[in-house]
Image (cartoon, rainbow, N blue to C red; front, side):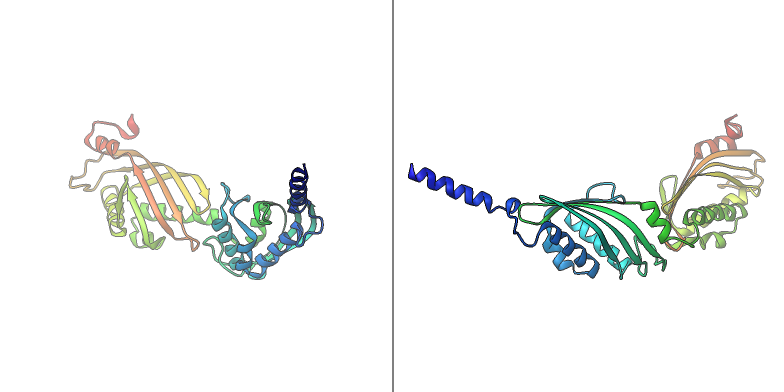
Length: 301
């Protein structure tokens, strides 16, 4: 009987001494979270690493999937590089057990590159709410961030040209230069190391220029009538028709005088400087050949 009482006393003391019930525990979950923000804002990633559990799960509007600890640390380093003076101003802090809810404002000036884009020099002042959850070792195991991403982006890009519109203009410039057979102007729209694909096959810039010149020779009135399907996030896709009359030699064959109308699709990826780094062009080459042979009328009629 005495052994039973002694064992019960030991269990009770251990239970009461656990972090969940230790009213005088220091630092508290709120203290840990505030230290987290101070370390993040100060670029102290050694302290940040010590505060975060190895099995961290972090979510944010810019992340389609939950992020693990290395990825979340990378996000913090990226923001610190983009906003060297960044500050998470805590307005409210609510603690309950292992959970802490923070309402605050993220402030900073974009003086460094962010997600491959150059610094804008703009200030941001964006409200946020973050829910933290600690494990029983007092490590942060869950971070759930919510903020108005559109507001953040509008502040970040305020006064700058519309990147989607600029990317679309670049692609339309490529199509116009191709129609004119101006291969030199065409080349200026592409990054020096751009990757080119035509009908799924990789091409060099030289191959690309030769193909455009060959179309212009064979079809002096060539026209690419394309409409934009999507423009945003550095990507532009277009779809439409290539039309023309073969009044010149093409693919080793003399002029036929036949009109062609061939469906085409283009995908263009642009970098932060507005240069195309990757281009995919798909064309119905079988229909083109059939129309040139007289087996099919232009446009499949």
